[in-house]
Length: 589
Ligand SMILES: [Zn+2]
Image (cartoon, rainbow, N blue to C red; front, side, top):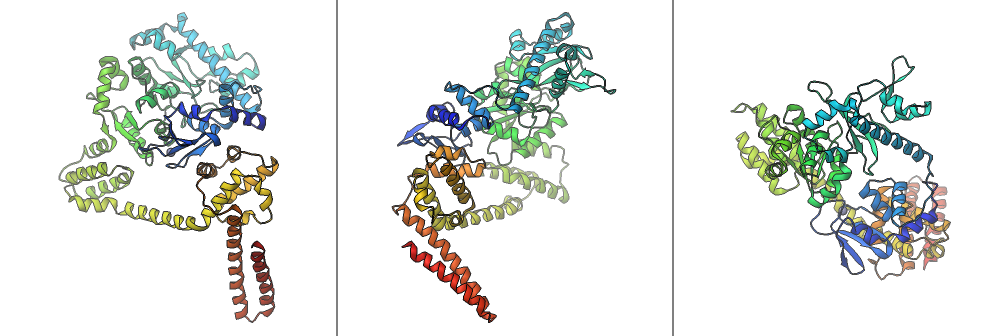
């Protein structure tokens, strides 16, 4: 990153049209000098996402996300900052010297070997030794097109086929080990292949690079069914999803994603025309993965095996989706032995779509599974335990209608009065949300006065950086009582001074690395016009005066303390200091 010059970064920002860039993701509606859209980062019904083309920034008043073209690409394509720079440079045809970051270069090496390994496995599938795998593919009714599309291959039944093929030198071996493809043997004098005699399914990251593999056994009763690559520099299981790159456009278009357990489920669904399915990578679905999906669609269907492990995984998925406002639904099969793969291979894609229509919302599903094994009439401790469990669940239900419906269902089940149960289930939650409300209103009252003025001053300086100079004697970071605003002011004055007061708002924005500050600043830039008539100099004076007033008040308190102790020496000293502060105020006007 440090190796890409700021000139190039500014050039990329200038040449990227923020409207057409963001327009690739959401429908932008012109509204005066700005554009509005439904936010791509949170779910909403009325647009609160604004793009300001002449400032080259965006901001969402719903979720607070904001930034410039780089942050937008980082968020929506899940790129790092340097990756986002390259991505946009590519788009506008600006050349960046290829290897600038040694760490990235090392990683590029890993992708190279992972890709070569994928090619090797594909090659082995076609060889005589791949016959067993080809038979298996036939048995699973995978078409040639599907096999090619997912780059399915075969790892030979040998301890060192890949090691021999790609591990010619010491360096090669070291890289293959870092890729998670080979391991050092017990005696420490040689390496062996991690994947042996398995159907090989490459896992691609969001950029389409092979970042690991899943290896599936081809005979029943062999364990584990899927052998997943270990976590490596290129493979983060919690943050990735199998097939995410291919599925994203379909997920966005259909506003729904399907989460399944196995890679074969995804592949079968794809072959049958269901192209918005993804799989977690051998682990239970994580909060990060749910968020990744929730950013791209409103509805997530879960289709886990109907066995106990599958159900537990589903419940975990429910618990992690707290806070992400998504419509989570559970796909249920009539035959509990079915999974997406077996069902769709037998019944076809259209029948699977019917299952989606019938999918139950996650809460109904939860009530049904939780209470299936209960013996009626219920004993009081059992009832209490159930209420306890649902008390955790109820606050995660965002819709009031859904909430009251579920409470009604549980009340029927527990044979309890609805209002008694409702009180039981919501007491704790209500107080929490009340506390939240009151703390919010507190913020608003503070903001009405001083904080707002601090924001106005920053807004003016964003548009007129040349005024930093004329106010530098008065305006210090001490006058910003709001922590975030103070940090923004400090960053602004530092950056502007270094750039001779020529930076545009978007350039200041990309110099910040704390997300809260980026959000706050993009909000300020979006509302630049939203300022009172009060002249800038008056505004600054007002802030300085408030600051001095506070200091005088502190001095006064210390003086009374000292007076009580008859400490006249201190009183004299403090009075002198107070006089100086008062003179400062006189100087302002
Ligand atoms: Zn938003």
